[in-house]
Length: 81
Image (cartoon, rainbow, N blue to C red; front, side, top):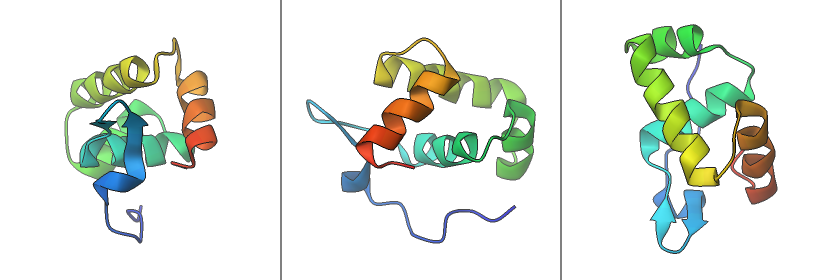
């Protein structure tokens, strides 16, 4: 699994109100957009699956949504994926 070819730039992940996605959140979001499971993302990033669950929960809060599909829709609207 290859990571995004472009480097993380904080300004590319502005949520508004001075909030930004972290580099790790952006990486998890990109892989969610590829349809990967938490387990697959954890393997790709070399972390435990509960860590990915924590990042997904943070993404849900950041976007103010209830599920992964809604996160992806909001992220697409903002041009994050």
